[in-house]
Amino acid sequence: MLFKDYYKILGFETNRVSEEQIKNAFREQAKKYHPDRNDGTQSAEERFKDINEAYRILGNPATKRKYDRSWNRNIGKDKNKERNAGNMKSSDTIIGEAINMFFGSKKEKKQEPKIKNKKPSIKGENIETGINVSIEEAFFGASKKISLRAVDGSMKTFTVKIPAGIRNGEKIRLIGQGKKGENGGKNGDLFIKINIEKDKKFNLEGCNLYTYLDLTPWEAALGTRKKVEGIDGAEMVYIPKGIQTGEKIKIQGRGYKDSKGGRGELVAEIRIMVPKKPTEAELKLYEELKKLAM
Image 1: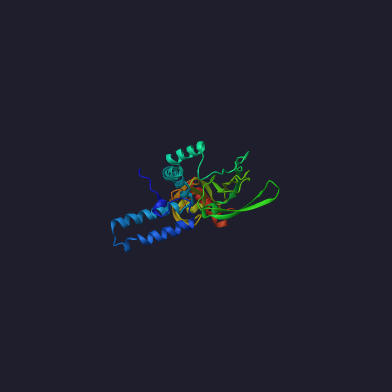
Image 2: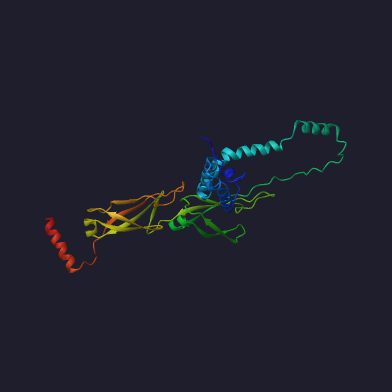
């Protein structure tokens, strides 16, 4: 299967680009190759489809992270080889350096002093911590603050941007916010593990959201139409006659976000609720039902 370089489609040579750069590049390319501006030619239509597909993948932080791993394997390694090849010395240069080593150079008589006992640079250690977020914060995205104690005892506060649709257990990386490096080495990174907390209203399992739908005994017996509250709005559903406690109503595409830009199911579990304080009229009706059922 041919691997598509979505970065190249949007006009980039590297994957080190920001969300804003991706958005601007998409607008520019989409405007340039829109079929209406190219007399509906097939090549323009195909290019326009590729541009939209590239933005759908790169414009979502979750799908971008997964794509970047494939991009590094398929494209990034080749670019690294090209850079390494450019840095390799030619055979003539190597021979010239060997001659200068034994016979000296006419142009360069002075030698730079050698630095003795230079300590190697050491990258600082990575730090890992966790942060709790609600299902709503994970679904819609949010900014959270986290405070950590530094080696010297001082407190350092970070603002963490939670991307919309992040999955439970995923980690957010803050580059250079780990322990300090030694001898000029780079600082380590800070990894923040996301823990999506259980909610009183919703329970998250994979990409599906689970909730409860309470019915009266007569609604369950006669059937009705009822609103099911979802994470981003209510959905009207049909309740069939004779539904039982524990049965489930499934609504496609109203659950949590998946890694492909879609959504899972919203699953409503039925609970038949008897009135805590029935009226005299209701009690009389229950007595009549009891006689009928005997």
